[in-house]
Image (tube, rainbow, N blue to C red):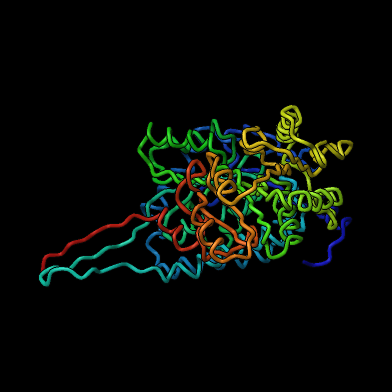
Length: 496
C-alpha cells in the first residue's frame, strides 16, 4: 500500500464526496426525500444523509432491472463481452482503490489499511475473475438416441435481489453481483444501512465502466422495509442474502408468500478452531487463532470464536493469545498503525458487551479485555477479549457474538473435540491444527462445515466455493459454482 500518513488519511476523509442517493436505472435518484444518517463508528459523527427507500423506490429499481433484463442488451451480449465489462469494472476499482478503502473504513470502522489491502483486493479480484470466466462457460449436448439431438443450456435466471451486510460491504457485494452479471442477470442490490456508501460508489463505477442502465441498481434502507420489499417482490426471480440466520428465515417466508423465488442464504457461524497437541507449530496456531478472532474487529461470520484446545496445551496456547490481545493496537481506523478499529456502531457494541457480561455471570473466566475503550472519541471501540473456562452450554459457546470475543474450551480426546465442534446449529467454517495426515482427513470429513482450514485459517482464493451447512445457509459464493445460483438449466430435445 502507498505510504499514506494518518494526517493525510484524515485530510482525504474531510474532502471525500459522499453521495447518499439511490442508484436506479443508471442514475442517482433521491426518491421520496426520506433520508437516514450514515454515522461513522470511528467517532460517532454523521458522514452524510442517505436516501431511504420505501416500496416505491424498490418498485422503481426492480422495474428498471426487469426492463434491462427483458428488453435490454445485457443478457443478449456474448458472454465474453459481458466479461470485458466486468474486467473494466475491476480496472476502475483499482484506479479508485484508495477512495473506496477510505469510504469503507469511515462507514463501518475497519482499519483503512485492511480495507485497502484486503477488502479492495478481494472485490477487484472478484470482478476480474468472473470477467475472465464469463466467456468460458459452456452448454452441454448429451449423447442420446441417433434420431434425436439433446441440448442442455444454462440461461440467466432473471432479476436478482442481493442483500448484503456491513462487515465486508464491497467483498460480499462483489461475491453476488459479479457472478450474477457474468451469467447475464440484472441486479437490485440492497447494502446494509450501516454501509451504504461504498455500494453506491461501486454502482457508479460500474456505470462508468459501461454497464448499461438498469443492470445494477442500488437502493438503501433498513431490512424490515427495503429488504422485505425485495423479498416479497414478484419480479425478483432470485434472492441472494448474506447476514444473520434470523433474517434469513424471513427471506424464506417472503419467498413462500410471494412468487416462490429461489433464495440463497449465507448466514451466521460459531466456528470451531481445534488445536491438537501435535500441531506443527503451536506458536503459529496461537497467533493465527488470535488473528482470526480479532481481525475485522471479530465481525466475521467465519470468525474462529470457539477455540477448542487439548487440555495438555491449553494454558500455553491461551497465554499466547492473551498476550497478543493485550498488545493489539486498538485505534483510529484512519491511523496506519491501527490493528483493530471500531465496531460498526454503539448499538452493536452494547450487544457485544451484553454477551461479555453474560459470560462473566455464567462463570467463564475473563482473561483479557472485556471493556469499552476510547469512549472519549465518540467511537464504538472494544478491547480484544478472551475467556477461558468456557462450558459448551454457556451462551458464549452457543451464540454468534460477531465481535472480538474468544471462548476457549478444552478437550481430552479427539472424539470429544469433534463432538464439541459439531454441537452447534451452525456449520459455516472450522479450523484444525495437526501434523497427522490421517487425522487431518478424518476430522475434516467429520466436521459439519462448508469450509475446513487445516494448519491455517481464512485462506483460499476465488477458485474454491464458500458457504455453509445446517443453519449457516445454502448455496455457494465464489468459484464457478456461484454461477449455478444465477442460472436456470433448460433442456431442448429435437427429434431428427
